[in-house]
Length: 448
Image 1 (spheres, rainbow, N blue to C red):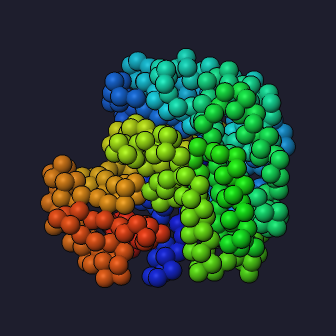
Image 2: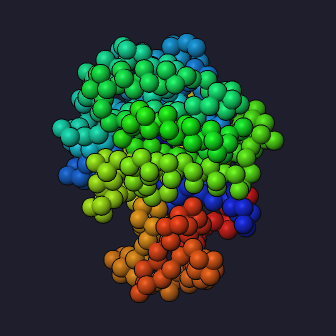
């Protein structure tokens, strides 16, 4: 369950594109000056006492969903997947060899694409390698994204054998009209079968992804999709607004722009879905997540341990994310790194025995302050500016431009102030990214 960190959506008030703020600075600021050598240095300096998160990108699907904003390849042949996995295993070896002893791992996430389309034997082999190269903690979260259209009993059994304990099921919408408009046809029965098989084979923590703002979507169809999802009782749901950026994603050019709901309709859809989920007993988490009270996200929010990183919201406290696979993003040492976007370049680097980092970013003190403020806002709808600046030894007068923008947001009834604490009014949660943007020092330089 990931927020689309690489996609920007229009700020309809100002024309500036707003990031999803899963990381800060955003990838728009990444530079080729940060490469494999820097990443190796950061890995070597990584302490072995603190657990890290692993993210493995499997960029393959059987068919293209027209709304998708992630880098994927369409293949009907397992050979391409198997060849890619061979490079992925080699990258795991290269990364593991940079540290003096096996890194402790508190979280493993398989994303895509559709990770579960790989042969089950390959998934078993991949998990065996990870356990051999890293010290995966006994209570680690091992999560995988699932496409219910291609999910098999063999893969469900493989998930159980490898200790997978959370699955994120891609639903988006149960409305057949919407499904046809986004080229993702899947029945309620297919989703139910996938959920039943996951639970049967011990994967009891289930996430659903739903969307609003899709072509031909209405408030009624959004409500019906939410109710069908509730009936299957996933532990948590992510409800994302569709970002139509055909200039970035060619597959989105296949969507009928005239069929997209307008701004007012999108807002009504989002509000209706949120109200329905909350009425069903789910707690709203941050910007776009909903969780049952006993889910890890809800518990983490109550305990003040909720985090937001390149994977979206997380109950984990791992500050280091090691990204593996083409286009994967990692947070390590003093900054961010990203592997080469194309599989061909990624394969060439790994086959040559070197890491595939193509760009990254080295954090400054000011970046860390702004990132901490933005993360607190995105997780808790509030941030103690004074406390964060003091903890980092940063003079908050440097945030004067942010203060000016916050004054405007306060006048609009979106935020309020209390002794250095900035709070977003809960009824204005939908404007949360606008508030975070007030602390983005780079936003004005990003291309529109």
